[in-house]
Image 1: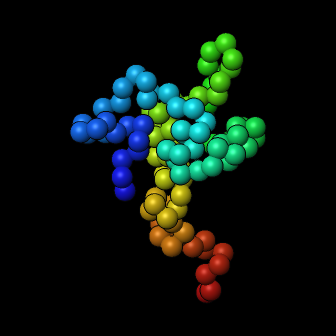
Image 2: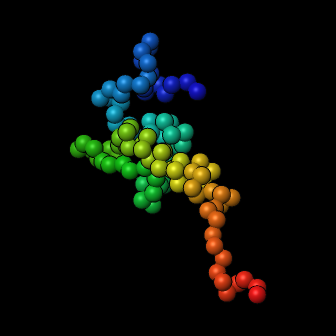
Image 3: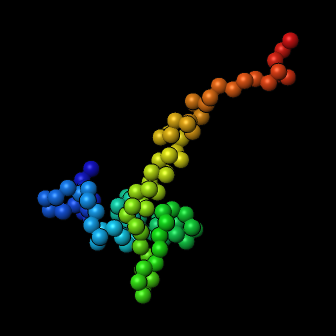
Length: 103
């Protein structure tokens, strides 16, 4: 997967985040997450999705890059397919109650 254009410099690695890429607009955050801007607007209205805030005198909706990454990690951990502890096919063994055992 190619590096995100906001994070990639011409010949430098994409890992260091500069001050101007620490905050993303709705459009840029949507592109970073692989979503549509409309989805982020709907989630914001419903108080779902990654945390956002208004910045500046015009109240532009912004997303902090580090918060987007943390939110994605939370989503991964909450999904049973990527968190073995939540996988219903791997439940811990349970003891049967004595009232269900036949005598």
